Length: 392
Image (cartoon, rainbow, N blue to C red; front, side, top):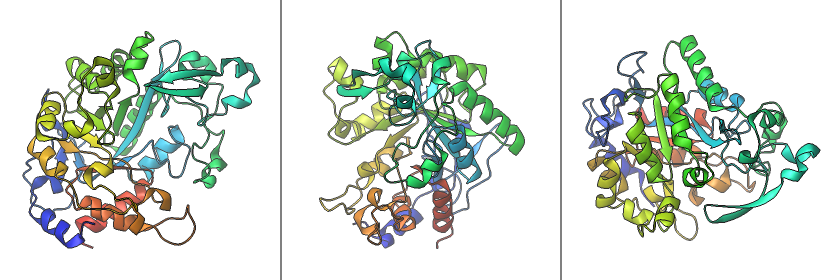
């Protein structure tokens, strides 16, 4: 596994990306975002501006689906808690309704994240669909109007691991993205600084095939709320490069290509016959290609430091160095505090769902030079960053 000592040596040799991230320096395509900076290594994160050049601390802590370690994901309650716990950015995943509204759900299959199964009036909507090559049986947002979805309530997705979150089952509705934008605007005014969002288009090729294109609807909302410019407090993300390319033609908002396991292929590549895998995209040539229309990548953490057969970390790859050389920032996913989700050497005790040594795992990932990280427990991420920046 990677040693902390070698990581600290790498960290000391890295320049401004260890200190702060200036979103306003983004260009319309492939401009450097956090690549070559100006502040000295190890400096404390700078405060975010409220106008002009907005800044984020680095490593940036991104609330994954809000504070999903503590509240049912993709609810206003989860988003609010993430912000209150110190998250620098709050994430949303977007899927459409039958009547074309964008709502915040991790998947269009809402069987496990809402109480839809308890609504007899929707029993007939249960169906089997194939989405991006995988078959699912359940209820899907594209079969409901927004008014119908608003009669449902959110529930905890992984109740086996997070039974404490079930306390909040039924408390919140499914939010629309416009409701989130209004919430962010209100919170920004209250706090005197912009609220950053990290927004994903889910299954864009699938929905385009249904006549429910995500990008154009998303762009209308971004323009309406002033989040379409290169210095907007907003990231756009997708696992489909063509969705990011489409967004790049429509807005100047900072864009991030999400990357799954090395042997996988983006679904739009499969549909178009593009033979490249994620392993190809993380090579210098692939990174250069992504930098032509995006400002960052969001790789799975295993692309940063692979795990062996026992689940322990091995040596870091060259991805951080190579991505920075291409002018791309890295926002990998996902850190969670619970034992099952941590590398094996950071698990503690015999309780499968107890917290392990999350601080230790955060430190190892931060030492690779990543620019930010998605986490279900943003307060842990903020404290881990404080330890890291202060050399503790």
